[in-house]
Length: 260
Image (cartoon, rainbow, N blue to C red; front, side, top):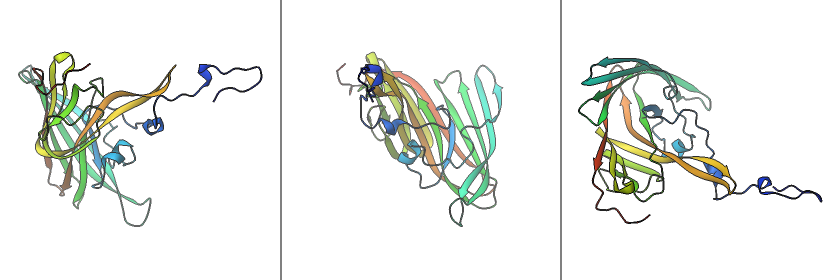
């Protein structure tokens, strides 16, 4: 609010101005860095809205923790092996605040080959407990392709050529490919995720609240893309997932609209 008083005039620096509504909804403090290949375990009933707002507790301790790692291979192909034995905290019976813990071993191998524009990721998940465990396993990616509301930067999948711009919040089921296309300045580039097993997809924008002389406003920073699978992990029986992230340059899309 402006300063008050007979001999004190309000200046622009004394005013709290908002350039858009509901900025308070953007004030979410991330508990982990917005990187890629970040591993999450959620309860089977997790939703896009809860995950975006950080109100859906990650059951595991994998997202912000160190992994064992080693690098193998030669100039033709490099392999980065990462592994962690972690703990999932599951709600137990007996009321609020009651949890039971389950140990899970996660191994992932990233393969980069000289003749491929992109890389492969192989996951192996093993339930170390003595009873089955049902979870949503998600692999979070974050992509910064600048303008979130530009018409020539958008999502596409095996189900549609255009799911909307990079500000879009999406909840898709059973897709085998999902990507981001950038046609800025008529240069066609597609970053595409391909899954060996059909995946559900969540997307949402990552924004910050910034103050300028014009007031507070939300600024697009990047897009979170979380392919996820509902898995029932049997004791001692590893579950495997495979995906590829590919980058290719294409001619401008025939669906591209002219504009600025």
